[in-house]
Amino acid sequence: MTLHGYTTPRTPRGRAGLVPAPPWHYVGDFLVVDYWADGDAAASLLPEGLEPFDEPGRCAAVFVDWQSRSEGGDELTDPVRAQYKEAYVVVSALLDEAPVSYCAFIWVDQDFAMARGWVQGFPKKRGEVWLTRTFAIPSAAAPAGAAGDAFGATCSARGRELMRARVTLDRVSDSGSVHTDPPIVNVRYFPRLGAGDHDRHAPGEEHALLAPVSVARGYRFTFAYTVDDLVTVRELGA
Image (cartoon, rainbow, N blue to C red; front, side):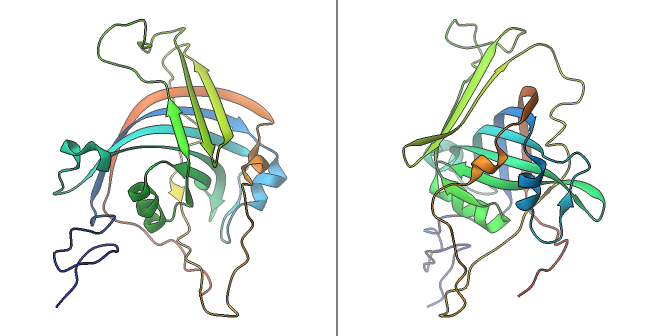
C-alpha cells in the first residue's frame, strides 16, 4: 500500500500530515519596529554566503497575527488549523552585494506553522505571542488605527518573556518598514543523526545578541502573500 502526505505522518489517504502541500496562502496583521543592534553581534549570526549590511546592526522586530490556508483545504472553517501568531527578528545583510533580510530568531504558537517554517528554512521555535487587535467597528476596546492609537505585542517562551514592543501611531508611512523591505533569505538546515556527525546545539535562547542599541520607527499594517515556490540562491556544504 502506498503512503501519501506532504509531511509526516504519511498515511494511505494522505490527510494526517501536519502540513499539506503548497501553495499556502497567508494574511496577517503586523506590528514592526525598525532598530539597530550591535553591528558585530548582528554580523556574527549571518550564515555562510551573507555579508554584513552597509549599516551594521540594522534589524527589525516583527510580530504577526496570521491566518492561512492551503490551496484546496478547509482551514478557514476549522480555524485552529488556520490561525497562529509569531514573533521574529530579521537582520539586514548583503547577498552578492544586493540587500536582503535574514531571519535570525523566530517563535510561533502552532505546530503546523513551525513545521511549515522549517520546510521554508525559518528557524522556528515554540513560543507564545500576543498582539493588540483591531475590529471593524468603533469601540473603546480596540484602536481604530488613527494617529495617537497605541499597539503592543509580547513574545515569551518556556515561561520567560523574550520580546516586548509598543508602537504609537503618528501618520501613514511613505515607505513602510525599511528594515524588512529587502527579500528574505533563509537557510534550510537539517542536522545529521549519525554518530560522529552530530552538530553541537546550545540550550536556551540567544536573541539578546540582537538587543536594541537604538530604535528608529514602528509600523502597524496588514499584509498578504502566497508561498508556492522557492529560489535556491546557493548550495552550502553537504
